[in-house]
Image (cartoon, rainbow, N blue to C red; front, side, top):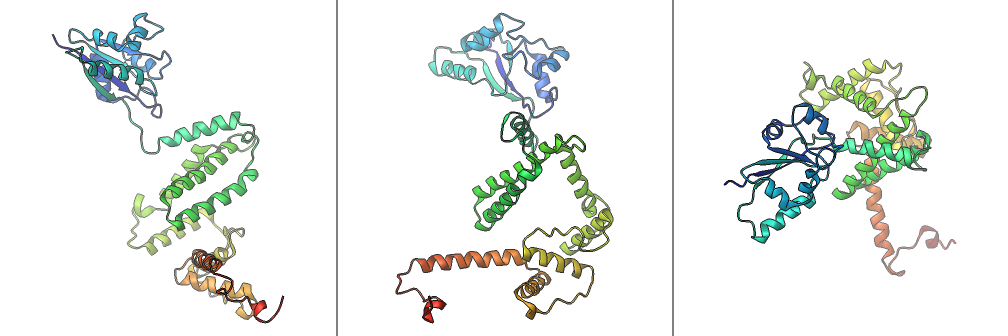
Length: 343
């Protein structure tokens, strides 16, 4: 007498119900008994529509007993029968623990085969669906999040981006992963707020759809017939596509004036250079700001990010300050005012 089989069929809620793998459908149609603990399991309507009878607590008095007692489930497999258990979102930990105890006890000599069969798999990016669902719930139920506006969140967006940059500069992988999550939260939160707009609502799918369209259009060398052999070729294709999309009257249009000063100066200088405009820089002798502008333009022309370069230098300077703080007062160089006897 064969001992039969127990197939634990798992599915993911991140894939539309009914989209099961072919081995899963074969197992369901070939089973002698199909059990499911949750009468509201999202797969149930589709499995039953396919002609598979499923016993649940709502339809069978024996289903709860079989799912709650591993020994009873083993007995149900006698005679070579196959039992499929349509698992819940968290699996069936109590059932699998019970089967493991029976196997370890040595009291049963012919245990049924136990197979874990994934009926559907998460696709890359599937956890983003969880984030959207969590944000929906927070927006609806949290007294702080519910009334927030785009303007309320704006300072947090700036702060999170700076923290992301700091994690990148520090080379901390754990911190980088966490800060990327914080930046992603800002995107999802803003998109959720936008859904509530009475006049011009949009949602996260509109946001994602827009950037997908933009990326495809601006990468004709990947998705079209254009050719790009170098990074400069790619930049030129990007500039052409962007110019056609935006139809701007000036090369300075679209440059955000609220960004850090060095980045703003470099961006303006880069736009002028890319457009072939010979715009003389102001006399550096006119003041510190103009000297910084000249340095930012020089860095941009050399392919150096002035903002990043200054931040790197500032971090090194911070370490020098900390090192100086560790010296005794006699070892520290006098400040300029002290050297001249000034207070």
